[in-house]
View 1 (spheres, rainbow, N blue to C red):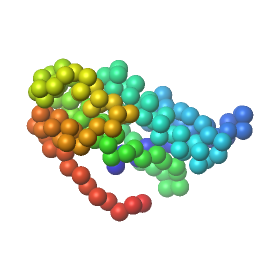
View 2: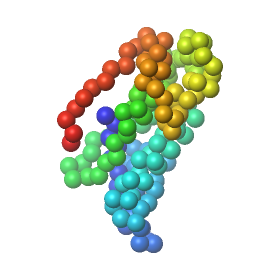
View 3: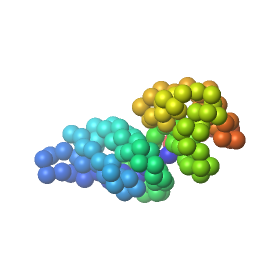
Length: 142
């Protein structure tokens, strides 16, 4: 589970500003803490998509402080980020993965698009093409 710590701070215009210590490109705001945290997931995913577009490593989340706030990314987003990281580690580009999967490049683009609702079987196939297996783990809710 990818849980990123966030800082919530009052802004000068009466809103709550959200900042991510691990992803400085991600920031947003809300009318109160709850709204700010709801907006934070979208801001974090948007910033991470920039990392993917720029072919940069995705920052690992630092530990969340005891009474600190955090944002948890969805399991699908986590799987897509794992695919991206595995591709980078293996030195496999999108075109090469498309060849291995016998599909078109836009299909691989969608697998890495955090806004696209990819199917689990498609991600499993991509991991298999990289010599990996995708596993699901169920944890007690925090």
